[in-house]
Structure formats: C-alpha cells, structure tokens
Amino acid sequence: MTALLIAGAVAVLLAVGTGTAWFVAGMGDTGTSASGGGGSAEWTVPLANADTMDFTSGLAYGSWLTDKVVIRVQRDGVLAYDLASGKRAWGIPAPGQQVCGATPDLSGGKAAIAYGSTHLCDHLAGIDTATGKLTWKTKIPAEKSRLANSLNVPRIMTTKDIAIVQLNDAMSGYRLSDGRKQWTISLPDGCHLKDTNAAPTQVVALVDCAFTKGTGVATFDPATGRQVARFPIGEISLMSTVLSADPIVVQREESRDKSLFTVFDKSGKTAEFTSGKVDMLAMNTVAFIRGMFEQHRYAVHGDRLYVATFPENVKGKLRSGNKALAFDLKTGKQLWESSGTKDTMLTYVRADDQGLLALETGDRRDLPPRLVRLNAATGKAEEIATLPQQYGTEAERARVFERNGVVIIVPWTSVASKYAVTYVNTKEN
Image 1 (cartoon, rainbow, N blue to C red):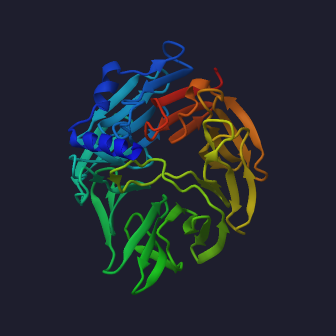
Image 2 (image 1 turned 60 degrees about the vertical axis):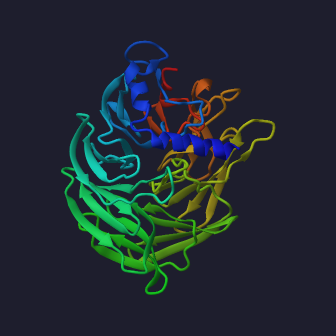
Image 3 (image 1 turned 60 degrees about the horizontal axis):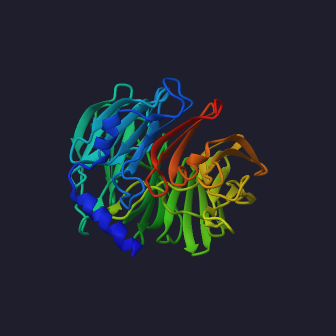
C-alpha cells in the first residue's frame, strides 16, 4: 500500500508543470532564524511538502558551499542562502519546466545544471555562483522514458573546468566557462558503460564489452576525452560502482552478503579485497527519476576507504543504526569497525588525514545529533559537538558540510527531513 501511495504522489508531481517548491521558498525569501537577526548561530529553511508522501518536489539534484552561501539545486530552481543570516542571497528559477540534474561539485565557483520539460531533460546551463547568474545554455542528447510519468535524467560529473554528461553509453565534456562541447566518447557496438566517476585528473569508466574486449576499467583525459589506459577487471555484477576516480576504487556486489573491492593506479590493479554486506543504497534517488549521479555512504582519502554496514534496527528504539568500516587500500586489510558514540546512523561528512568526520543523525525523540571524528588508525570515536535535538534525523539522507565548527545539512529528499537547509554554528550553541 505504501509503495502505491508513493508512486501515485510522484506521478501527480511529474504531471505538473513548474512545481511548488520555488513558490513556497520564494514567499518568505529567508531562512527561519533560531537566534534572530544577522550572524545567527542557527537557522533553517523549510522544505516544501515535508511530512507528505511527495518526495520529489523537494528532491535536491545537488548542493554547493562557497565562502558566502550554501546553494541547493532542486526541481524548480537553484536557491542560495546567506551563511550569516539564512536569508536568500539569490535564486534562479528553472530555465525550462524543471531542473533535472546538477554537477556534484563546483569548479572555480562554476557549475552546471540540466533542465528541460516534464518528459525530456535535454538542456545544460552554466552557473556563476558568485553572481547567481546563468552564463550559458546548450542542448544535450536526451531520451524520453519508456515508463509512464517517469523521467530519465543525465548523469553529470565534474572535473577541473569541465562538466561531463553521460547518457547511456556515451559521454561528452562541456566547458564550464562557456558551455562549448570539448569531446564526445561513444562506445562501439556491444559495449556498455556500467558506471562512471570523475576527478580533476581523470574520468574513469567501468566498461562491459563482454563479446569483444571483455570487461575493463578505462581512464580518460578530462580535457580531451582521449582514452589513457584500460585495465581488465573480470566479471561485472549488476550492482557495480566506481566509488572513486582518484584513487580508482571499484566495488562489485558478488552476493547479497559480500562485496569485492578492486584498486587501480596508473600501472594497473594494486589490490583486491572483500567485505561483508555494505550499504551501497543511493541516498539521492526517488521513484520514477532515473539516471542521477548516485550519492552513496562512503569516503576515500589517501590509502583509506571508509564504507558503512547496512542499517539495522536499534533494539528498543524507533531508529536504525549502522557502523563505519575502514580498509587499507594498499593491503586490502580491514583496519577497524566503529559504531561511533551512539547506536544510530552515521552520515559521512569528509575524510582527511585525521580520519573520518561524520554526523550521528540522532532521533528527534531522545537523541540529539552529534558531530564525531573517527580516528584513522583505530576508529575510536571522539565527540566534537552536539546539535539541537530537533534536527535529529535531518542528516539521514543528506549532504553534510562542516567548516570551522559550522554544520550545514542539505537533505536529498524529504523522506526523513523537514528542512531544505539546516545551519548550526556548534561553537555558538
């Protein structure tokens, strides 16, 4: 019954023209300050249609952070909020009927969004985040979905100064400065792109040419599209993901309870190891929207890979919990397993030389969220700050930023969230 309700809500939403989130956000033109006035230690922005079964109007296609604003890319437009006050700094309504994609990161303050009609996502536009203006528009290849009331969206990735757009078995690179197409890669007949990822230095594709060259990992120059290298990898499962493009880390689900990780450098395969069941469910997908660059619960830094166990119910509580796992990418050895400081969901913020920074999502009923750091060598959890309890589940499916004690939560959907943006300066709370 629940699945039918979700499907029905999505179908109705996709049949509507411009959506409601822009209208709702534009009415107030500001976040809700919890401490009043400029320089607020805490503020939020309401999420359109929260507490309903409509999970798509509030879906974020991307979120970016600059020195001055946090930016949320959603179906009806791009909205930027001033970090100091939560007031809306600028906004760009969807150039077409709806926004349907975004680069996951900024490059020199520039980004790109995809947009189109309710049935076809067929344009790309550039954004200058310093001015809040569209700088160019161009048409891109697109396909209508064969499923009623659904939308195929392009997978968009970012390298230095280039937005890479993938549709089915072709990739193209567009210059972020002016939208000019730099290259296109089309695979030969019988070959398929199973997954792709990008870093400033290279684009990495998991390629399946089962009846010709076999399966392999191919790397490309992001400036020219030229193939640089190709390495064999063996059988590719249905659930296979390029977790990282630099270093190259590929995850393949061998069975329901086993994953295989393969690591490559410029010379080829350097390590391969297995783990138990890990959580590779996308945090940013909803029914009837297909093709987005998926955001998973993992982090890579240096010679460390951090993944998460599959969530399980916490005994005696109405919440789920997971654990962080750390692997050495050079040896494949599991270094540690950590549940943080409490039994709850860990959402990764970033990995660095010190270890893994994560947000324990908490529970609105009895457990406030906590910012914690897991030691790179031991996995020992250190609590850095506690957030107000009212934001308990906001980060369960979200992108979380942290800067100098400021925590910013931008949920992908309204599944467990009430706010489009949550800002907490933990040093002032």
